[in-house]
Length: 174
Image (cartoon, rainbow, N blue to C red; front, side):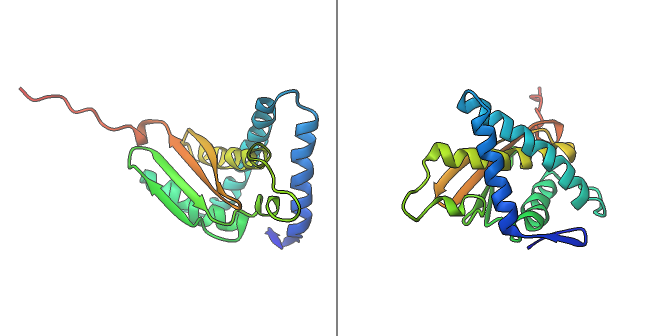
Protein backbone atom coordinates (compact mmCIF):
# COMPACT_ATOMS: atom_id res chain seq x y z
CA UNK A 1 0.00 0.00 0.00
CA UNK A 2 1.11 3.55 -0.75
CA UNK A 3 0.33 6.04 2.07
CA UNK A 4 -1.33 9.27 0.98
CA UNK A 5 -1.74 11.68 3.92
CA UNK A 6 -3.82 9.46 6.14
CA UNK A 7 -5.41 7.52 3.29
CA UNK A 8 -3.90 4.58 1.48
CA UNK A 9 -4.22 3.30 -2.03
CA UNK A 10 -3.41 -0.17 -3.19
CA UNK A 11 -0.05 -0.47 -4.95
CA UNK A 12 -1.63 -2.85 -7.47
CA UNK A 13 -4.38 -0.29 -8.20
CA UNK A 14 -1.71 2.34 -8.81
CA UNK A 15 0.20 -0.07 -11.10
CA UNK A 16 -2.92 -0.63 -13.19
CA UNK A 17 -3.61 3.11 -13.38
CA UNK A 18 0.01 3.76 -14.38
CA UNK A 19 -0.09 1.09 -17.10
CA UNK A 20 -3.35 2.49 -18.46
CA UNK A 21 -1.96 6.05 -18.45
CA UNK A 22 1.07 4.95 -20.48
CA UNK A 23 -1.13 2.97 -22.91
CA UNK A 24 -3.51 5.94 -23.30
CA UNK A 25 -0.63 8.29 -24.14
CA UNK A 26 0.72 5.74 -26.66
CA UNK A 27 -2.71 5.38 -28.32
CA UNK A 28 -3.26 9.14 -28.58
CA UNK A 29 0.21 10.04 -29.88
CA UNK A 30 1.53 9.95 -33.43
CA UNK A 31 5.26 9.44 -32.76
CA UNK A 32 7.43 7.81 -30.07
CA UNK A 33 9.01 11.22 -29.34
CA UNK A 34 5.54 12.62 -28.64
CA UNK A 35 4.85 9.74 -26.22
CA UNK A 36 8.09 10.45 -24.34
CA UNK A 37 7.38 14.19 -24.27
CA UNK A 38 3.83 13.77 -22.93
CA UNK A 39 4.83 11.25 -20.24
CA UNK A 40 7.75 13.45 -19.18
CA UNK A 41 5.42 16.48 -18.91
CA UNK A 42 2.87 14.57 -16.83
CA UNK A 43 5.65 13.30 -14.56
CA UNK A 44 7.07 16.83 -14.27
CA UNK A 45 3.78 18.21 -12.95
CA UNK A 46 3.34 15.30 -10.53
CA UNK A 47 6.96 15.64 -9.32
CA UNK A 48 6.45 19.34 -8.60
CA UNK A 49 3.40 18.63 -6.46
CA UNK A 50 4.87 15.65 -4.62
CA UNK A 51 8.14 17.36 -3.67
CA UNK A 52 6.15 20.28 -2.33
CA UNK A 53 4.27 17.91 -0.05
CA UNK A 54 7.32 15.86 1.00
CA UNK A 55 9.69 18.79 1.62
CA UNK A 56 7.18 21.08 3.34
CA UNK A 57 8.53 20.52 6.86
CA UNK A 58 12.20 20.20 5.89
CA UNK A 59 14.84 22.90 6.47
CA UNK A 60 16.18 24.65 3.39
CA UNK A 61 18.88 22.78 1.50
CA UNK A 62 22.29 24.44 1.25
CA UNK A 63 24.72 22.35 -0.73
CA UNK A 64 23.81 20.93 -4.17
CA UNK A 65 24.45 17.38 -2.98
CA UNK A 66 21.79 17.84 -0.26
CA UNK A 67 19.12 18.28 -2.97
CA UNK A 68 20.10 15.04 -4.66
CA UNK A 69 20.38 13.15 -1.38
CA UNK A 70 16.84 14.28 -0.55
CA UNK A 71 15.63 12.89 -3.89
CA UNK A 72 17.54 9.60 -3.38
CA UNK A 73 16.53 8.99 0.20
CA UNK A 74 13.33 10.73 1.27
CA UNK A 75 11.55 11.46 -2.03
CA UNK A 76 12.29 7.97 -3.41
CA UNK A 77 11.26 6.41 -0.08
CA UNK A 78 7.89 8.18 -0.18
CA UNK A 79 7.15 7.07 -3.72
CA UNK A 80 8.76 3.62 -4.01
CA UNK A 81 9.04 2.57 -0.34
CA UNK A 82 12.81 2.18 -0.69
CA UNK A 83 15.86 4.37 -1.12
CA UNK A 84 17.80 4.53 -4.36
CA UNK A 85 20.34 1.69 -4.52
CA UNK A 86 23.37 3.62 -5.75
CA UNK A 87 24.33 7.26 -6.32
CA UNK A 88 27.33 8.41 -8.34
CA UNK A 89 28.45 11.94 -9.11
CA UNK A 90 31.27 13.65 -10.97
CA UNK A 91 30.98 16.65 -8.59
CA UNK A 92 30.22 18.89 -11.59
CA UNK A 93 26.44 18.70 -11.58
CA UNK A 94 26.01 15.21 -13.04
CA UNK A 95 24.44 12.54 -10.86
CA UNK A 96 23.54 8.95 -11.69
CA UNK A 97 20.86 7.27 -9.59
CA UNK A 98 20.63 3.49 -9.90
CA UNK A 99 17.60 1.47 -8.84
CA UNK A 100 18.20 -2.28 -9.08
CA UNK A 101 14.52 -3.19 -8.71
CA UNK A 102 12.55 -0.30 -10.16
CA UNK A 103 8.98 -1.26 -9.35
CA UNK A 104 7.34 0.47 -12.32
CA UNK A 105 9.17 -1.79 -14.82
CA UNK A 106 9.44 -4.89 -12.64
CA UNK A 107 6.50 -6.63 -14.35
CA UNK A 108 7.81 -5.96 -17.86
CA UNK A 109 10.21 -8.91 -17.74
CA UNK A 110 9.50 -12.59 -17.41
CA UNK A 111 6.42 -14.50 -18.37
CA UNK A 112 5.96 -15.38 -22.01
CA UNK A 113 7.29 -12.08 -23.37
CA UNK A 114 9.80 -9.48 -22.25
CA UNK A 115 9.17 -5.85 -23.17
CA UNK A 116 11.42 -4.19 -25.74
CA UNK A 117 13.71 -1.33 -24.75
CA UNK A 118 11.37 1.19 -26.42
CA UNK A 119 8.36 -0.15 -24.52
CA UNK A 120 10.31 -0.03 -21.27
CA UNK A 121 11.49 3.53 -21.99
CA UNK A 122 7.83 4.60 -22.22
CA UNK A 123 7.44 3.54 -18.58
CA UNK A 124 10.65 5.30 -17.52
CA UNK A 125 9.80 8.67 -19.12
CA UNK A 126 7.18 9.47 -16.48
CA UNK A 127 9.81 8.82 -13.79
CA UNK A 128 12.29 11.12 -15.60
CA UNK A 129 9.68 13.88 -15.54
CA UNK A 130 8.93 13.12 -11.88
CA UNK A 131 12.58 13.67 -10.92
CA UNK A 132 12.90 16.75 -13.16
CA UNK A 133 9.72 18.29 -11.71
CA UNK A 134 10.83 17.63 -8.14
CA UNK A 135 14.20 19.28 -8.77
CA UNK A 136 12.60 22.21 -10.61
CA UNK A 137 10.37 22.88 -7.62
CA UNK A 138 13.50 22.85 -5.43
CA UNK A 139 14.91 25.52 -7.78
CA UNK A 140 17.31 23.15 -9.56
CA UNK A 141 16.85 23.15 -13.34
CA UNK A 142 17.99 19.79 -14.71
CA UNK A 143 17.67 17.36 -17.56
CA UNK A 144 16.98 13.72 -16.70
CA UNK A 145 17.50 10.67 -18.89
CA UNK A 146 16.93 7.00 -18.15
CA UNK A 147 18.90 3.93 -19.11
CA UNK A 148 17.77 0.34 -18.90
CA UNK A 149 20.47 -1.80 -17.31
CA UNK A 150 18.92 -5.25 -16.94
CA UNK A 151 15.21 -5.47 -16.17
CA UNK A 152 14.09 -4.41 -13.62
CA UNK A 153 17.28 -2.38 -13.02
CA UNK A 154 17.62 1.09 -14.47
CA UNK A 155 19.52 4.28 -13.89
CA UNK A 156 18.61 7.94 -14.11
CA UNK A 157 21.22 10.49 -15.20
CA UNK A 158 20.61 13.97 -13.85
CA UNK A 159 22.46 16.91 -15.39
CA UNK A 160 21.89 19.92 -13.17
CA UNK A 161 22.14 23.44 -14.52
CA UNK A 162 22.43 26.79 -12.84
CA UNK A 163 24.84 28.72 -10.63
CA UNK A 164 24.98 26.10 -7.86
CA UNK A 165 26.47 23.57 -10.27
CA UNK A 166 28.78 25.72 -12.35
CA UNK A 167 32.49 25.40 -11.74
CA UNK A 168 33.95 28.79 -10.82
CA UNK A 169 36.31 30.15 -13.43
CA UNK A 170 39.61 31.24 -11.95
CA UNK A 171 41.52 34.07 -13.53
CA UNK A 172 45.19 33.47 -14.23
CA UNK A 173 47.49 35.36 -11.94
CA UNK A 174 50.10 37.69 -13.39
